[in-house]
Length: 288
Image (cartoon, rainbow, N blue to C red; front, side, top):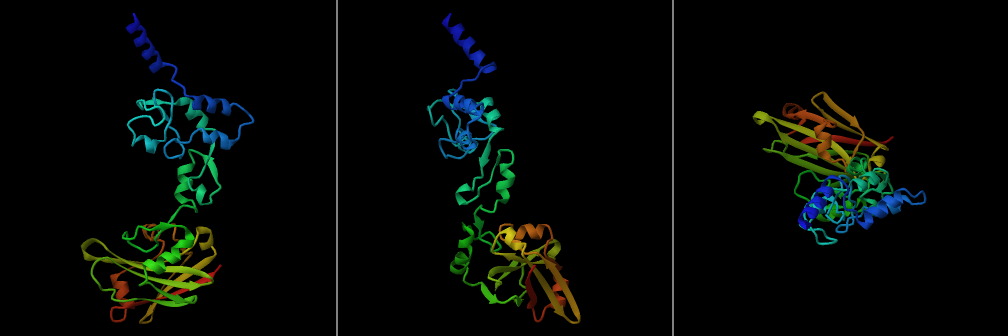
C-alpha cells in the first residue's frame, strides 16, 4: 500500500505541482508586492555558486533550489541541499523573471543599465564597459583590461610599435611582398587621443592577396564618432582615397574587414603605389 502511495506521489509531482523552495516562494510573493524594489526581486535569482543571475529557462533541483545555466553544466548535485539536480523547470521563477530588470553583467565596471533578461545578451555583447581585448591584430595576445589600461599594455608588451605625433602622418609599410598573411601596425597621437593604424594582408584563393587598411581609436564608440580619418595612396599620377569614422577598438579590426568598412585593395593596386616593396599611406585625422 505504501509503495502505491509513493508511486502516486511521484506521478503527481511530475504532472502537476512542482516542489517549491523558500526562495521561489519569496520571489513570487515579492513580485506581487507593490512595495518590492526591482533590486530586491533580482536578488532572488542570484546563483549560489557564481552569484551571477539564473535566467530562463530556470531549472531547479528536486527541492526547488535554482542555479544558473553555466554552473549547472559543471555540477553533479545541488550546491544548496546536495540532492540530485534533476531536470525540473521552475515555471514560477521563469514568470517572475519576465518582469524583472536585471543589471548588466559589467555593472562592477561601471555600467548602470538594467534591462529585461531577453535584452541582456544583445546589450552585453556591445556594452561599453565590457573588458577591452588587446587591439593588436592576430590572436597571439590574450590580454584583456579596462580602457585606461590599453595604452600601458601596448607600451609594455608591444614595444616594437612606433608612435608618430600629429594629425597628418605617413604610415610606411615595409616589405609588402613578404609571403603569407602579414600585419603592419603603427600608433598615431593627436587631439589628446591615440589611434592605431593597421594594414593587414590576407592570402586569398590561388595565391592572391588582399590588403585592408583601417584606423582604430583607443577609446569608446561614442568618442570615435567625434573624429574622421582619411587614408590616401599617391604615386605615378594616381590617387586612391578612403574616408571614414574611426572604429573603436571595442569593435576590432576583423569586424571592419568582414564588412569591407576600410580601405581595400589587391596586390596589383598595391604595386602601383609601392616604391621598392614599401608602401606609404598618408593618414589624416580630423575632428568632426
